[in-house]
Image (cartoon, rainbow, N blue to C red; front, side, top):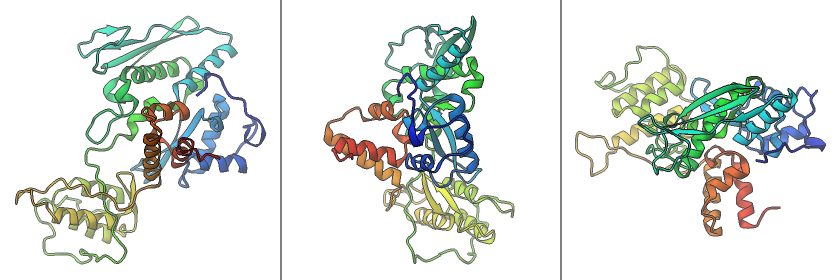
Amino acid sequence: MSAELVQTAGALAIRPDQTQWTEQQAIVLRQSGIGDTVTRAELDGFLHLCQRTGLDPFSRQIYLIGRWDKRAGREVYTPQTGIDGYRVVARRAAAKSRGSYGYEDTLWCDASGQWRDVWLAEEPPAAAKVTVLRDGLRFSAVALYREYVQTNRDGKPIGLWAKMPAGQLGKCAEALALRKAFPHDLAGVYTAEEMAQADNPAPNDRHLRSVQQGEADPWATPGPDAGQTGTPAMHGRSQPAQDIADVAGTTTNQAAIKELYRQAHSAGLLAETVKVDRELLELGAYLITRGQQLAEPTPAASADEVPDVEVVAEGETEADAAERALRAAAANAGLDNLDEEFERSYGLPIAQAGAQQMREMTALLTGSAA
């Protein structure tokens, strides 16, 4: 992202007086990866934020990123930018008010509580501290590594958090301090570095095979083992579909899955869509698959132990396919720092990007870009 604002013109220019996205603007926003589940309120709020901050979504200075929300039962969209976008807004706000704006040295802290102004250790710092100076006042903020690090399913850092943890943590602390110093100008928008941890997988995530059309429904009628020890107590009340799916993902008792299936059937929830490891599945299909997993132990498992089965999905999401193609193109092109180059170009990590953005970079790497 450029350190200066890119002034747009033409059909995509955002006017200060417009109250909704134009047809041309909406088309480009959709192509940037915004899904059909985005609400009118989220789009209207995003327009207002772009107008207030002066950041341009069509120059990749600010994004609307969707993340699954269990309570809402859908992807909830949050505005997001990079640290450079924060710096642009802060610089402009200070100039507009004819005030001063600067920084003290960034500090990093080790596990013992010792602060340093440079981080040389191989292990990541425990915390980072940034102090923003505005009009003679100090606005300090501390970011803890454990609260912001982006990890894979094994809990290991990934992306830039694995390669440059001190720099990533420093950006998080800087974003916190800038929001303190410029609360009106930066309220409601977060940086990619701060939000990376929002995509950390849950400990019990699994890749699940989608149930194929025509497969038998093994639990359509109650079985004799209802109420068997180990069945989650739902106390006879209807649970939201996602809550049932979450319980099914953690239990190791097949009888528990059967009971969950019967409760979901009684509540009319089997056709509801749930999120499992970034894959959308019907609740009934997921419960059947989960029960089959628990019924089919591997030969290496002991008689009284249910193995930790991970079934690879037959299909993959659009974003998964786009990422796979992008990484293959980067390997063929000899690009060994794909994650850094992508984040530098688009202002967010690959894990948070839309399929369209990944396809754009794939086209550049393969020489097929228009």
